[in-house]
Image (tube, rainbow, N blue to C red; front, top):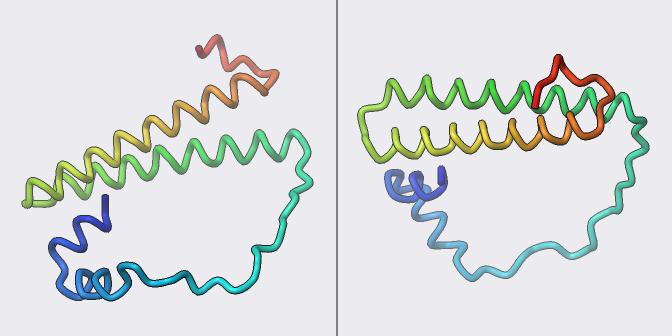
Length: 107
């Protein structure tokens, strides 16, 4: 969504976009395989941290939206904020599924 707005309102971004349309990928070697070795507590802590990050992002987008005068940009920021809240809910479901703590009956 941000790229769409940037391409529309920023001539330099639109020019760069036009230059790269149809360009072949420059990747010449396969990506290295990464296999993390997390234990359960680290995973749960990472989920908690991610939930916090989603809500922080949502608040930031809403704050910026309240200061923007261009309706299309404001509506995009609000839509992205709403998506961040959805992400937080998905992560919360994941946390509740795998954590033994029931968070005072949080459903």
